[in-house]
Length: 148
Figure (cartoon, rainbow, N blue to C red):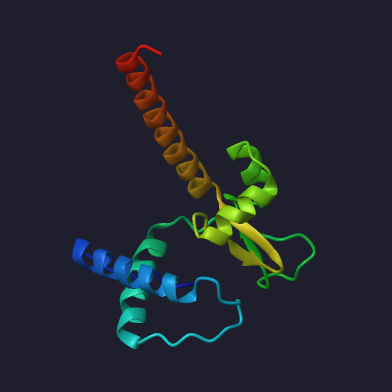
């Protein structure tokens, strides 16, 4: 039975970890997945502290992947494939893969497959919908101002 560790983080810790993670993300952008990158221990500890705090809040619902030995590879119940994400976002699978390459979606590798959190995909969709509505509202305002 796994012990549950409670980790307390405050807003300052989260902001610090976010800055360091963004700097780290910029350093690894465009690098191959097997490229070595040096990270100072302070930055890594800060990021890991926040990751531990967040992951301790997530539910531990897991199911085994079909055809694998128990404990080898697991897929969370709320993880989806890039094709399922494409269906939710009403776009093509290659478009989802471009969003992953740009760092807008964050997959997890299970064996050789990418898996995305359904909540992250739905949050991305909500943000995109808000931006589209805001742009459409601005366009309506402009057309009313200039009588198009």
